[in-house]
Image 1: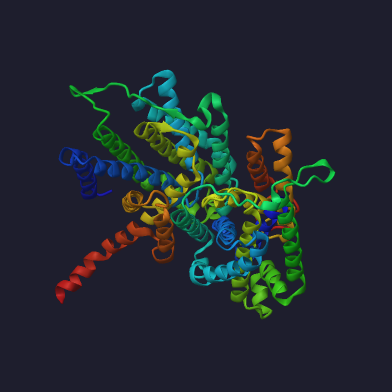
Image 2 (image 1 turned 30 degrees about the vertical axis):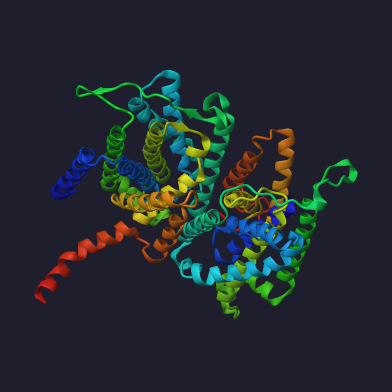
Length: 276
Length: 326
């Protein structure tokens, strides 16, 4: 779970870093990814681990369009307006999905993933293991993109200091569209990978968005390595908490950690983010 | 408030109170009740979000506390709703103090996220604290206590008593917010909204002002919750502690007009009627329009419908003169 959480968190943190947007609709993009995986398996018999190749670019494009046509004009209105605007967007998308696909809980069973693997005697669901591997690969690729390519460097530069980035000749507008597209694509890809392991329903985004905020705040808002660490940490805390504390309160542990970090370490556990 | 506008408000309230004498359609009354309830909640949220600029995503917690306290008092201690609802409001206000002391250490969007987390924790506790909340099963009210008013027995099967109760809550809420907007506290809140540091620098105890406002806001939201419990006669964590509830309160205040007394009413009329009409047509997804209106309002009408209308009215005399001349 950790790596998939981390992927959702990275998307959120890149968008925050570059645009100072707290995107409440991020969970809905994950939900769209899950439903995309569901329908492409149902209608075309495409395995989710193959259809991810199709859906990631589609969601990237969708993210760029959302930024261009819906978000760009709102951002100068301030952080709170943008926050509320994305809350509206989230409600809109979730309810459109409810209208289209009804509120039923669905599952996406994979024939080869019925029996879990048992390396070292620990039961690991196959779908989750494959998802973990792909998420790891995507995260690595993203890391290379951000650190090695010009576009990646432009994203990092803008999130460190937008004014300086403009002075260096970076087209901040394009970087923002790129970052938002990237964030959306990551959320969607994580959704596709999660589809075989979670229940699918239109309001699943609500659950995921809160988790991804926990992750991002744990690691420090705006920090990509922080999001990776936060994702893995949350995954661990939830599974260990379920074993050693109680299953009913395992979700609560995440919230408590979230509040404590916000209050006492606002720049994240690793001191690399810039919240506060 | 000028004398003329005071008279207008009283007349409007009296007119609304007389409405059930004329209209017997119970669906219409039901929609009115919902509008009043949502106005109360919108006003509650607006006190903090509109006047003090602190966007809370956790108001469902106060609504839920009010609903639970009211219904538990009734079922376990036989406290009648008309006492239980204010007590529920007071309990929500008491709950707001630690809530505020934790969350107000944060500012802007971080405050909003923290309120969301606290509200989710509250819901989690309600789901698992079986002894007090009956867990996910919740509580059901099967009968309401007999009440005689002015020689008539109140018939709880009709909408009218609920309509009048909701209207009274509405008057209390609008009155409170009207008072707030003119009080010293209200002026402090405006200062906090515009610039927190500057407000502190001129000697305003900003945390105290915010916590006080949160308690007031929670009191109204809690009474709304108590009313909800008796109107729908059912309380469970999903119904009264949902994130969706917090969001709807935000939307109603925002669409109507932030930091105005009339705004939440307009927002509630607008969104509730559209929402209920949608609910008639579709089983699910009737909140599509909430999201859509929210986005449209922020994009095109950042001051809200009422905010815009009010500005238009204030400008109106000049416009009329020029028309008369032409």
